[in-house]
Image 1 (tube, one colour):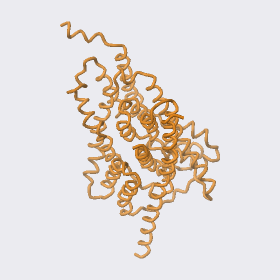
Image 2 (cartoon, rainbow over the protein chains, first blue to last red):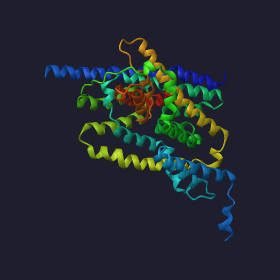
Image 3 (cartoon, chains in turn purple, cyan):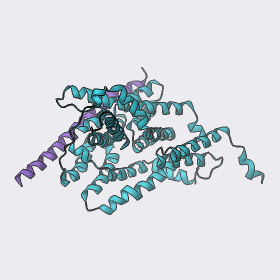
Image 4 (tube, rainbow over the protein chains, first blue to last red):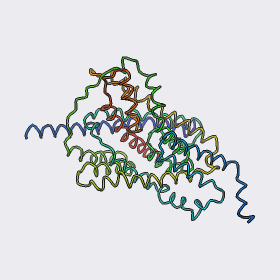
Length: 44
Length: 365
């Protein structure tokens, strides 16, 4: 297997899951922001 | 006199490039394919291929523009301020689950890098080709100018052409990968109002989070989110309008004609260009398939199913991709409005594509 192919496989194996992982962080962040806003509404 | 007419001996390669420039201008004007980019690229290609052209070379205006804005990645970064100012992330903030769809549809980037490497491109070139799958012109230009500047011309042409062809490319794949029943899944369009402070905090938090994981993303995500912050803060309407119009238009103008200047006959007329164009299409197809496949797998774990066509809208081609999905939904059921979810996935794709591009760069560098 050429060096380029093995590097491309490594980029896939690391890069695609990392993209997902960061979006999980974004998802949690938005949920938290929306949750705090709904709590704020209730206390108001 | 003899010196003036010496230019009539134009090499055949340059004549072919005139024709290619002409085709791009035709597609821009007649077919309305990304005219803001393809027309300047086409004309830039003609300017560059006139033998002895003063537009290129040491003191050539296009070479100066190239050095000032593309070689140092300034233009793509600046254009992201304009894009950020144009995007309303509200549909994504209302349906944050769409973030996953924006990530899933980046599959084409990673798979195309592998295919390009198998076809014999070196890893720098393979990455630049795979990034066409971001369906995001500025990111493609940013990465290609960093890793494979010699391929900037064909990569840009592929990125912008396929973006214009999203309805043609995506429709058959969506139909092929989904059943009639799946396409008829109705979506609940009830939404809650997103408070202003959430819209303001969103670009700041996204920049910080993405920047911590992949510092190389700050140049692109940071500019995108800066533009969005200007839009959402409510006190910089003049700047927001300037970013959406004057800045965006001016940079697009320079970007297009400067990219055209890289399309010399020697650099463009070879089998690799043809391969790059094909691989770009492959990347778009794999993106669409990845998005739909993810949506179908995700549905296996969900009580309330999500229409899998929405997975196809996770690419960055905004708003074309969301429109395609919405129209297909209406064709199956005139009362099924998918636009809200599809737009959410589409703007998630805008972030996902920049993120994926940056992660690939971070892993390589």
